[in-house]
Length: 165
Image (cartoon, rainbow, N blue to C red; front, side):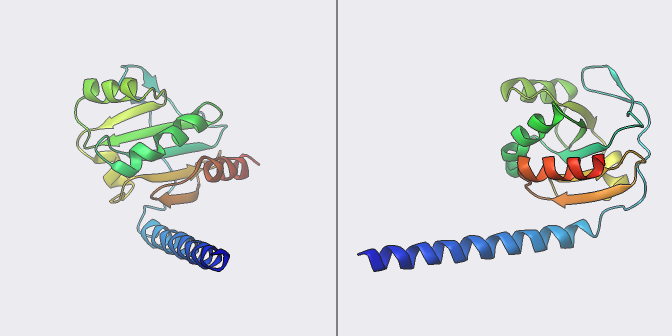
């Protein structure tokens, strides 16, 4: 019996390792397609009708997501958590009206700032074709990290900490 448990544990460990390597490889491949130019985010209207102006002295995380995206839903708490400590702006693409996005945020108890990209102008400029996509810029607005797909809170915190120095 113990031998069977060891065997299944090894299989589970191997499968987890394989999936992790595959997912990171896929993320790296998809991230190469992103627009690598410097960020030029002008003052922009948020869904709550306030104006967002990036703080030029701090690193910035830009997170592109959609309300209908299942991976985005799983990752939403991670983005919300990090937005309490770092500057984060999110771009909701193909997600409906400002009211629908606001309701989605309320229903899921999310507090991060959102730009409604109804015409996909921002996501197209960033060359984002897979959701979620997270871009991390240093204080000089140079792209340092890009992730396609799910990223853990720990991974996001490490990346933001890295670009803070």
